[in-house]
Structures are given as C-alpha cells and as structure tokens.
Image 1: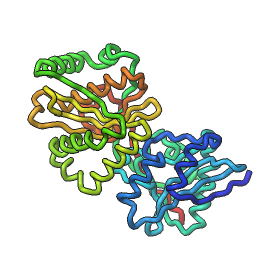
Image 2: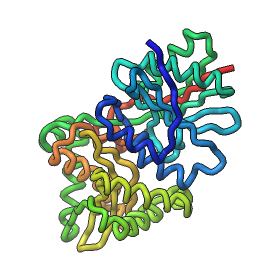
Image 3: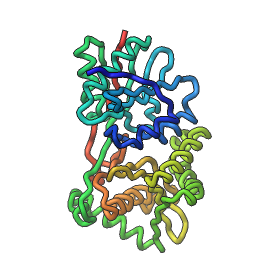
Image 4: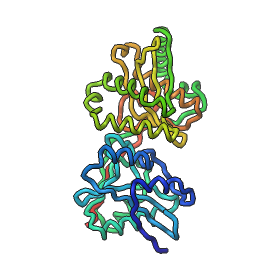
Length: 326
C-alpha cells in the first residue's frame, strides 16, 4: 500500500482535527491544534514549521507536528510548558505512519529527529523508537523526568480509602483546620468571559508562591499562559479554580479537562497562608471536584514533588530520544 506525505500549516491543522473520517487519536492536549498555535505565536521565532500528514487512500493516518531548526526536527513545543509531546496517529496505523515519516525526513535533508517529553506509553516511544533502530538508525533515549497520575474512583470516600492511613488523617486534619479558619470558598472559572480576570488572580498567586515561579513567568510566558487559558476555555477544557478565605484568594490551580482526564498544569498560593496548607489543599479540593465531575484520571503532570505521591500519584517515566537520520 502506497503512502503519500504532504505538508500543511498550523492554520489548516484544526480542520484535520475536526474531520472524524480520519480516525486520528488526539491523546495529548499538548498536541491539539490550538495549543500548538498558542505556543508558536510566543516561542516559534527562529524555527520553520514542518507539519507533515501521511496519507493512505485519501485518509490522513497520522500527523507529525514538527518544526525544524539547523537541520534538526523536533516537536512544536518545549518541555517547560508542554509536559507530554507526541505524534497524532490513527490506531493500527503506527508502523505505516512512522515508516513513511522516517523515509520523508531522510530524503529532506533532516539530520536528526529530537523528541522530548515522551511518555512511556506514547506512540513515539512504543512504535517509532524500535522501528528506527530496526532500520539501522542510531537511537539514544534518556530518562528526562517522571510524571505522576492518579486513577480516580467514583466517590470522594473511596479516594480517601486509597490513601495510606497516615495520609488520610493528614488530609482530614488539614481540611478541618482550613474550614475553621473562616468562610471557605472554592470556585472554578470555565467560561471565556471570566478568564482574564481570573488569570490576574492566578498569576499573582503563582508569582508570590515561589521565587523560581516568579522568575519563570516572564512577559512572553505570561502572554502564553493567558492565551492558552482563553483558548482552552473556548474549547470548554479550562478548569481555573480559586480557594478563598473570607473572600480573599489564597490559592489557585490551573487545570485542563480533556477526555476524562484532568491535567494539573500549574498552581500558586499566598505564602502568608502557608500555615493552613492552602497550596496542597487547593489540589485536594481540585481532586474532589474532578471526582464529582466524573473524571477518570487526575494527572499531576511532570515533576516528582512529594505531595503528588502523598495524594496517591503513581510514577510514569518521561523520556527524550534522539534519532540520527544521516
């Protein structure tokens, strides 16, 4: 069966995502067209768009959301804001897609394919790596980080039962202390009209919570965060939640809800209220809200922070891979 590879733009990528006949599997929010567009607007300078479709009998069987710089192809995105990256492939078409993609890259003067932020269960890690090795390419994969996620049970009580006895007591104690401190509120912004005001609160808390987060939130990064919050709200996937004490915002979490999975993207809190554990409790309340919504997985995303383990998260390795094409 012959395969044809075509190029497209970020602007036309959204139409491919909406065309159900292609049966493409958009597993990661970080590969969605509107996410790629937001990243490219802020950080794409100096690279060339290199989005490729592999066609089979008129259908797209896979999309490679790549960019090229100095002879190296990599995902559109960066590990600091894209926790997972991957190709978009129709189920059962992985071998055909990756074989056609490697052939095209080799013949288009691409020296190396560098892929970062690959989950161990990603299409690239489970299919492309072995295929490239079988074709004689030099492949090196490095453990880059870990991510943690949590299988959500149907009820809050069942979630608490999943925790260790010590952690059950700790969560209960901290919640009691919080609710004794005043009038506690926990509200979630989801609509586009309210996003930017809520982002003012979120960004203030994020910057105040840690010096490294304040340094991370540069002007271009703030522009990206605001853009992606609005974009995800338009897609009905934003969950921007704020914890208040006596109407004063003390902690906030920015999550995305996609395909029954809630992604904890970033968070912040007021250090003046750290004695009430408002930072970790904002995540606890986010988990409770996700259970109430019927979500199936709570993904803490990259980073081995201790609270993720204490709240029931399980490790998933994250790799970066280099494939020499010359």
